[in-house]
Image 1: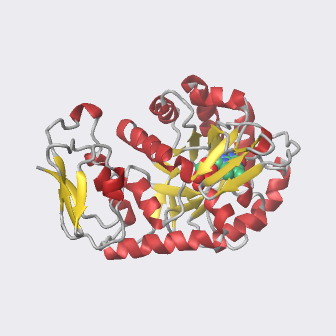
Image 2: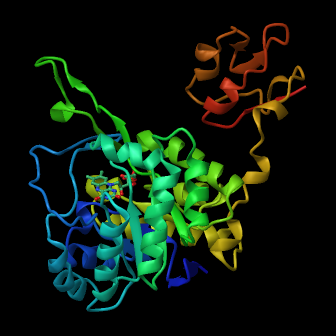
Length: 369
Ligand SMILES: Cc1cc2nc3c(=O)[nH]c(=O)nc-3n(C[C@H](O)[C@H](O)[C@H](O)COP(=O)(O)O)c2cc1C
């Protein structure tokens, strides 16, 4: 039921562990695979390894900021790591990062030789401004993709940045260069917060924000690509439940990657997401998880198609027993009241903004006439 084909590779399930230090070597990749991942992407490998800065990762209950750069294992060392990673089988995609098409082509052919099942080009990094510029430049992405595609027989996917003016244009360049797919999105440039006692921004510099903070951005990027380019998509950003994976797939992702949740919850989160997805698929009598791909796109309208008709909030069930007054307290137009537990909407005041419908924990409100 969860088996799926991505980039021509058969996966046991559509949950892929994203590029990051949780997949920094053979043993950690093995840990991801042993936790039930359908595939794993290595931490990004570069030809010149650099010293890690310290500190480089900060996290809170919503996500993380990182300024961690790339794998600290030389590309030659990845021959050994790939052997360890693939000792018991499993799909491993090599993430590589570089500055020129020929450098990337060279690295990709090395990783193919070392047993990688696919290549993911990591062309952006919010902590490295020059790479953010590359990520927005469709011509450079085309050249890089083409060089790598010509150098290897395994599929090549390109990881796109949300920090770009037109993500669809970049995805089109990947397709034109015969790339097999795209991954969206990488982390988004930001600052997690400021310690107001010491006036210190988290990690003392800008970095890549991930986790819950960026899921809406990832969802929108995936939908935009799915609506404009016919190309397999791997959705990533803020996935920590089976439901999040379904959301990405319904907006056009074929498979979904999980990153930050592995550092905030541990490797066990991978199996939990897979199991939640399986239960959801069973409850919905799905034969094949890929059947839901793009299901929500038909309901994703352009702003021009939005309604102006005077719909207002109505109450499904006037008796509200929850110890909650969110709809009353938060109504900007002061249209919701409750007398003896009975919720009522003042038709003269309600402007149909929809806020109460979206925040009601008991789904007792809807928009209608
Ligand atoms: C600590 C950390 C390190 C990361 N390292 C890489 C990397 O080496 N290469 C890459 O392409 N993306 C890297 N990412 C980005 C993730 O693969 C992913 O695209 C992003 O975090 C959004 O997904 P998430 O919210 O599930 O983490 C890293 C993210 C984090 C938090």
